[in-house]
Amino acid sequence: MVCVRGLKSLLNEEITVIKKDEGTAPGWRLGVRDAFGIPVAILAAGFIGYGSLAEEYGLSIAHSVFASVAIWALPGQLILIEMHSIGAAAIAIVLASTLSGARFLPMSMSLLPLIRDPRYGNATVYFAAQLISMIGWTMAMRRCPDLRSEERIPYLIGFQLTCIGTAAASVVAGHLLAGALPPLVRLGLVFLAPVYFLMILIGDLRTRLAAIAVICGAVAGPLLYVVNPQWSVVAAGIIGGTAAYLIQRKHGRRA
Amino acid sequence: MEGALELWLVTAACALGHYLWRGLGVALSGRIALNSELFNWVACVAYAMIAGLVMRIMIFPVGLLAQSEVVDRLVACMLALAVFYACRRNLLVSVSAGVTVLMLASWARTLG
Image 1 (cartoon, each protein chain N blue to C red):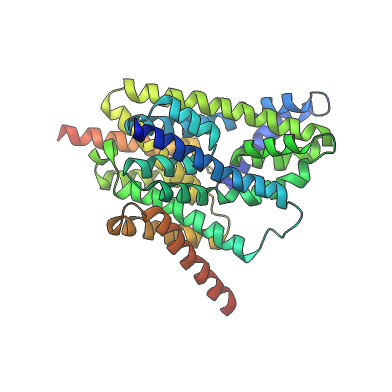
Image 2: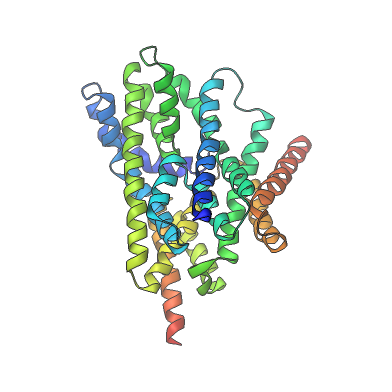
């Protein structure tokens, strides 16, 4: 969903470069190798931005690492620390953050049939599900059909653990950088996370429905914040998202 | 201290919430169609929520970012988008451009 198209064009070059190793190296090692390069660079930028922002909000490094590893979804983490910083109610934060993770449902639903193999039990499969991220999903959907069935889950795990390690290190770097650099550079670092999301959102709109939803949300978000900061994120999602859904349905019927 | 504990608990709850989607995806794979109407709606809500939050941060930021001018932030965003499309959808180059523009604009204001 979000980000997939742009990622695909970026990752294409990576894939052709490493294709010659197929069939020789074990799956997990291919996964680790695929991760180093553009995926690691994209993640580092995003998580350095997140760490800087968290430092600015007075959150601890330990918390940022925990949030990054446990939630493992930047939009959900951004919602968490933004809403926390304005003192939103716990229930509103959990609701908004959780709803923002809805993209993982179709992602894991579509990836699972591709990677399932009788050699791996349920525990391994459910563990792999926790590791799925946007980049890993995009990569695995493209790479796995070329791998032997038993190498696919190790590939995903190798790739994703490399990504999570990068994220954890980057978030620490973000905290340290934000604490050490002069105010002007800190301003840039704090701005990194929102710009990153803006690019991912606007740059990779695949469907008309997604585009309408982004526009409705972008209008509703700031307006509702004026009315009620605490619930503005949840409200913008539900009101803006429902409006977008209805607009598309009406339009689709007429056409 | 109490506030800190609450934050950790809220974070754990968010993580659980995210895992719900991932785990449910595993459980449901191959059983229901991906393009159901309910899912379209949920996707709309997720998109709108993130877009709403990002625009809110751009227009009404909290903390350090609030010390920059709203015009500078919006110009930086537009230039970043222009660079994104000009440079074959390069995320890293466009984000760097946006950040650099905001830093330069804010620095220029301190001169005047």
